[in-house]
Image (cartoon, rainbow, N blue to C red):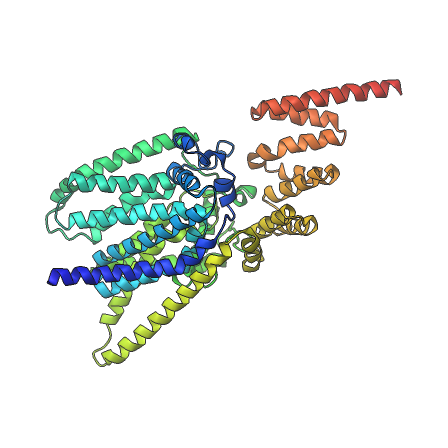
Length: 559
C-alpha cells in the first residue's frame, strides 16, 4: 500500500506538471508559420516529401547554398513526417511542439525528484513548465530542435541516474542512454553536451560508496559507446558540412572583424541578460542585436554586471563544493555545461543571443532555484513561526507562478505569424537593427515599399557594419528598376567580401550591365566565374555583357 500510495502521489504530481505545460502552451496550437519557419519548413522543398528524408542526413540544416549551415537531420526528418501528416499545414507541427513540451516538463520533474526533496522538486518543475523564456522554442515551429535536444539530454540523465541508483549500468540501460544521445546530437549541435551532463550527475547526484575504480569500471561500457558515437558524429558532420565549426558566425561579428577576445568580452557583458532571462524574463525579444546589445571591443563598464553574475555563480559553486551541497553543485554545473555551446564563449554562434537556446539551461536554473530555496527554508531560525512562513512562501510562489503562466500564455500569440511577430519585435527592441531589417522586408513583401525603405535605412543607420541590410535594400531598388540607387548599396555590402560576395556580386554585376557600365560589369562577372559558384549564370551574363560591349563599340565607331 505504501508503494501504491507513493506511485499515486508521483503520478498526480506528474499530471499536474504536464497540465501546467499544456495549459501554458495551448494557445500556440493556433499559430501558423513565423520567421525561420518560412525557409526551414514552409518553403523548404527538401522536407515536402518523405522520400527525401535519407538525403537530409547528407545535407546541412539550411541547405547547400548556405556555407556550413548546421547539421540537424533528425529535426528535418521530423518536419518531413509532420508536413505529410498535416498536409502542409502548421497545426500538426504545433501539436508536436506542445506534446514535446509536456513530456519535457514531466521529465524535468523526474530529474528533480532525483536531485531534490519531493516538494522542492515539484516547485522546480512547475516553474520550468510556466517559464516564459521557453515560449520561442514552443510557439515557433523551428524551436522543435531545442525541445528534442532538451528531451534527449534530460531523458538521458534521468535514465543514467536511475540505473546508477542500482549500482549497475546494464547494456539495455546503456543502449537507451545512447539513443537519447543520438536524438539530442542529431536534433541540434548543442545536444553533444549530454556526456558532460552525465559526468556531473555521477559526481553530484549518484550515491555510490564504492571506490572510483569500481565506479568507472561500472560505467565503462557506456563511456566507450558515447565516445565512439561522439567521434563518429563529429566526423560525419564535418564531412557533410566541410567545416567543423558548423554555423557561420553572426554577420555582426564579421562586419566589424570581431576577434575571439572581443567576442568573449561581449559575451561577458551578456551574462547579465542570461541571468535576467533565466530568473525574471518579464521582457522577451525575438531579435537581440546591436546597438541594443552592444559589442565590446575593449574592457569597460559594460562588462561589470556580467562579471558580477559570473563571479557570483563561481562563488556559489565553490561554496557548494566546500559545504557538500551536491544539489546546488549539480544544478550550477548543468547550467554551465548546457550554456557552453550556445554562449559564444568558445565558438562564434549564428546568433548573438536567442531565447530558444535557453531551454536546456533553464532546467538547471530551476533545479538551482529549488535547491537554494529548500536550503533557505531549512535555514530559517527556530523563532520564526513555520505556519506563517509557509503561508508567505506559498503566496509568493503562487504569485510568481501565476505571473509566469500569464506571461507565457500571452506571449504564445506573438508568434502567431509574421504580421504579429515583426511589429511586436520592433516594439520590444526599437534599438535592434535586425528588428528594423525584418520589419522593413516584411513591409516590402506586403506592399508597403515606402515604409519598408524607411526601416531598412534605419537598420543601416543603427548598425552600418552588417552587409545584409544594404544588400536587401539594393535588391528592392533593382527589382523596381532603380539600379542607380542600388549600385552604391551593393558596393557598400561588398565591403565585407567574406560574407557578402556570395549573394551581392551577381546582382551587382547585373545592375552594372543594366546601367551600361559594361567594362565593370564584365570584370565583376569574371570574378564570379573565378569564384566557382553559379558559373552557368555568370557565363550567361558574360555573353550578354560582351554582346552589349560589341554593340556599344559599333555604335561609337559609326558616330
